[in-house]
Amino acid sequence: MNDDMRSEEYSIIKQCMDGNAEIYAVLVERYKNMVYNIAYRMLGDDEAANDMAQESFISAYVALKDFKKGAKFSSWLCSIAINKCRDYLRSKKDNISIDEIAEVSTSKIATPENVLYEKQAEQNIQAALSALPGDYREAIVLKHIEGLDYREMENILGVSENVLKVRAHRGREMLKRLLKERGIINE
Image 1 (cartoon, rainbow, N blue to C red):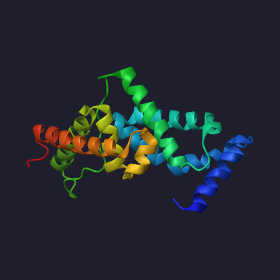
Image 2 (image 1 turned 135 degrees about the horizontal axis):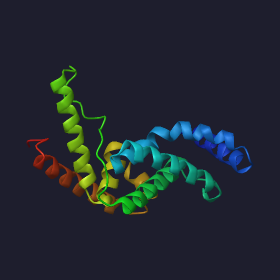
Image 3 (image 1 turned 60 degrees about the vertical axis):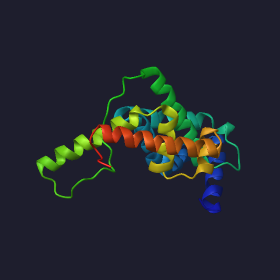
Image 4 (image 1 turned 90 degrees about the vertical axis):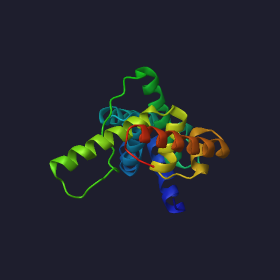
């Protein structure tokens, strides 16, 4: 993120705190896909992800007074989204539905067989991701799906970079094992 963008975000936050709630829509528009993707990867359910994304933006707006100038708004928002997902998972436990993962693509030809195969593969991958312990799932989602660096993950999760590297590595290994068990990969 460049300094101009960060300055703009600080300006938007100040305007919100001064009573201009409508300007918050700029931040929502900028980060809605990121927050939804994190929630979807954490929860595996489109409806729940939409709900948690919406709740994350509402919570962030209500807590703008706690935002520390100098911090990245996106990191702060990610930590709110992760916490919302954690709360949701605690409340639902094993009651998470499995939906599709957009990144899985096995063929460009949309025959009924390929569509069915892709859908099953997507469900199996999301099921494997959902089966990971929460700490490992968070590391996989933030590092490998959202593409964050370990420093930013450290700010979001409040865990040291070394711990995050271990979680990402172990999470990848667990995910690989689960995908082998489900017949998604053959390695």
